[in-house]
Image (cartoon, rainbow, N blue to C red; front, side, top):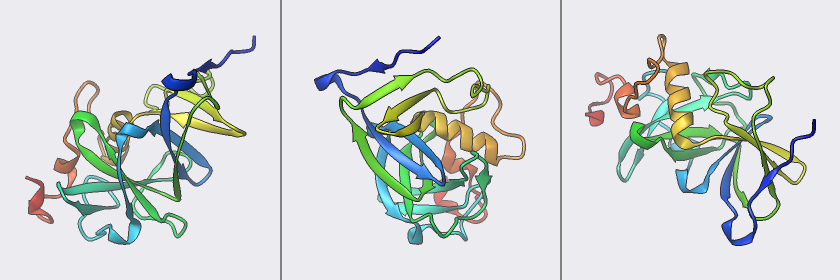
Length: 179
């Protein structure tokens, strides 16, 4: 059975931020993207909770995470990662995700589908697929990514149904700015 796409016509079209991490392209609502920062601004000395470091913003310091194209949380960046996308994690606070490229996509050219059964896992932050031209984007949100990277980066994860302020994941002995 062939699935039919759910498209957003004209003025109701959704704008997404396309975040490329290796061969994986994540698509988050553009409203979840707060800013783009250079990876060189990530302080790798101030890390904790499985983060690759932290970054100082106008609103304070936030943790920065790095994932590979298999959605494994990494302790460090790769040479092709040049951009730190600052995302809203909802009630969990802001966090950075290190990417190789970021672009805005949207309009009538997007077609959305549910996650195929073979891709569905309980802990996955992917809630759908979006076609943009010849590319398949894995749809998620900043809040879903925040829960995922926090749980994947912590030795025991964040228990189901609980949330944590991402800033509290940094080692307070290393960085007192996270109170």
